Amino acid sequence: MIKDDLLAAVHDALGALGIADVPNGVVVERPSNLEHGDWSTNAALVCAKAAGRNPRELGQQLADHLGEHRPAHVDSLEIAGPGFVNFRLANTWLYDVLIAAVADGEADFGRIDLGGGKRVNVEFVSANPTGPLHAGHGRWAAYGDSLCRIFNRCGYQSHAETYINDRGVQIQRFGESLAARKVGEEPPTDDHYMGQYIIEWAAEMPDDVDPAVWGVEHALADQKAALAAMHVEFDTWSSEKASVEAGHMESAMERLKEGGYVFEEGGATWLRTTDFGDDKDRVLIKSDGEATYMLPDIGYHESKFERGDLVIDVLGADHHGYVARMSAALQMLGHAKEDYEVIIGQNVKLMRDEKEVRLSKRTGTMIEISDLVDEVGPDVARFAYLLQSIDTSQTIDIDVLKAQASENPVFYVQYAHARIHSIGRQADERGIERAPLADADLSTLVHERELELLRQLSSLAELIEIACNDRAPHRITNWVRDVAGAYHGFQHDCPVLRDDVDPALQQARLWLVEATRIGLSVGLDLLGVDAPKEM
RNA sequence: GCCCCCGUAGCUCAGUGGAUAGAGCAUUGGUUUCCUAAACCAUGUGCGGCAGUUCGAUUCUGCCCGGGGGCACCA
Image (cartoon, rainbow, N blue to C red; front, side):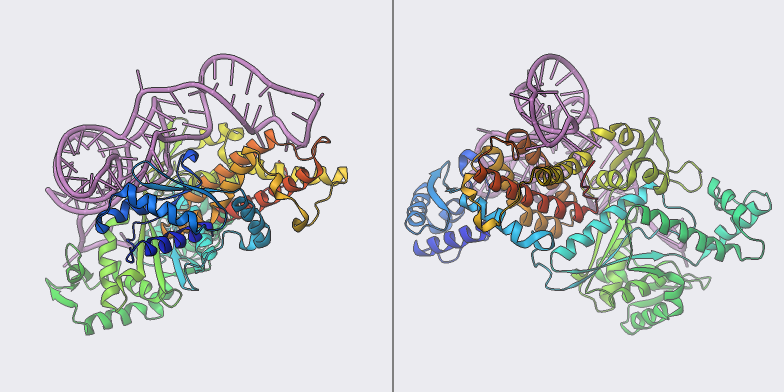
């Protein structure tokens, strides 16, 4: 990539100027303002102090040296501001982007190897199998699925996993709630499940089944259907019950004891998680002899390392307090701290009819994922979830999403993709063929709209890298919007098929359109959003 | 009290240790003999506050203020 080439040249130049140890802060970046060149480096500013030199002077020497040993594509250099060295490049660097996009195709454009084949296990959604998934779960579904796609594009092998909490008191209460509704009674206590769906499900329940068993199966089928409608699939649905039956809990307990981390106090069995930075020690087995939720969960997490070198949990903000203890337990079991990562996502607030809809299974007013997808479709839903950082709380207003049907950002992007295909269809009708790229004269692409589009396309790999390292799929969402914007601008100002377009320019533009198609397809695929050929 | 996230334009949100901080929506006005006008263009007195680190802070650190979420022998 051009960026790496320029950075290497900067390092060489610094070396020639007697600066061998280049600080990490030296970067080559795109100035926000094009007047400051296509690329820029802060090298002189960062190195000046340690080298005991004046930044402007050092910058000038740097620029002079780089001017004499010009990296490819560099037209001119200048020193500016407090000591930036700005590179102005010939458009050929952008034509190389087009050529690379076409050569790589959808399969490889923007692909980078950050992971080296490392296996990443990503757990997300993990909702209790005691009811449908609500629209709050949708955020984790969209996020987790997109994150896995990004990992896969960056040389990791992702494994999407979700945990089924299918044993314990809440399952018992769920069964009792169904049984009660079956005979037309209220569930026995306020701690039971009061939602409307319990009444509906109880009506479907046969007489001769165990309500808890039937209920869990029914809930799982319902959840799978909702996720399928959102185009989210898991590699593994992990059952807590199965994990316990496989002995994960007991072997974890044994090893924690061997490590000397377990102690008895007040009739309960504790884990000394404070040894690894937790606020307080945690109970594994209560004084009544029952295991807490934590113990089987430790066993389960330990077992996930069979399916991943790096284990990631995507959890809601209400689980934040849980992170330190699980991290401590896994370190006790011999895992490196950095091999277990928890991504805490902030909450989703749902609005309908200008009122907040509480996401509780007990109120009966919840908005299910399937409601949302039925009303706006999977693409709008996923795009909406991935529009902002997972670190910010999000408000999803179904009425706004529906009302925005035509102004919705997802359509803006999909429309760009559809227009590209429309050009292909029109070209076919008019008998215009795209000759081999090698025969195209890309130097005819000089319109600012064309160059801007190429600049956007050039940043895909950088954005994918950032999205991966920061676990931030929304960076892709923004990139795709930017590319769509650049494309719409191009299409508005730069006719492709019109009769008066010079044939050489027409060929170059057809290839530019093709490169854009590839870029948009890659971006949308990383988001799990459909790239339609017509709208 | 302690821990985590957030505070950027009228609204919803991007973004950045740098040189003039962006988008969508909303407002107002414009663009169509031309590949889908689901488009394009124009229109904006904005980084909560105070210190610190730095050549340079909206970005990092501390404190304060404001909003959200947690602090069980629940799951």
